[in-house]
Length: 313
Ligand SMILES: [Zn+2]
Image: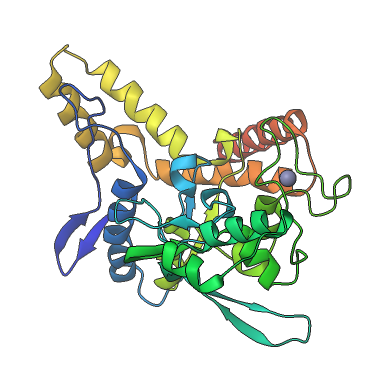
């Protein structure tokens, strides 16, 4: 984003040279989030009192969830120790029980005894009808120091009344298969939990940053680059750099800046708006239920008419 605020030209542009050896590495979700946090104040300055729609391509990079988000696929089904080196630390949540009461659900608990070990021994001894001294076991399994554990998806499901006390459920369906709760009640722990309202409500990082700033977030449809005007802008930028190429890296980078600074001068007036209108016409055609071929024909017809209306008579 680029514009003039109080007579000063400002831009959120970042030139990034991908690659590990001589480049800047890879453009990650963190880079994009930092850039978005620069773009939003700029948008607010340039368009005060407006709500922006920030649209992104479909890419796993753009859909990354925060490290504390409620993402069932990142969770273990059993109790697991939490270590400082863990990438994720899930936020606590709430759920509504069958009576309509809102209940808190912590994700972690502190253990001073290895309860899983105690439970296993109790079950084995009971099966063998051996005496069980709970106090002995607690002393035997006392941990040298308290530890924090993630409580596991099975416990979370049981607390929500979605799984019977002694019932179990596989962690996740085998890879390559589709979750199908109609065939297998509950399907798997990951699917069942992921369909809970608080899990469904999780927003990705970019969405969260955009929403918190009072703006809107959307993703372009998959495999439809014709709906994203920036693709045409990049195409034109590449064409321009190629035309002006003298095979030096310095010229290449300066041409890119030159194009982005002066795209209207280089490629005629309001080129961005032309690209935007073209993309919008595709979106509009798809919204009316047209397929790709029909949409293409509508756009071609519109362009023909548009040109003929402008023609001098
Ligand atoms: Zn499943």
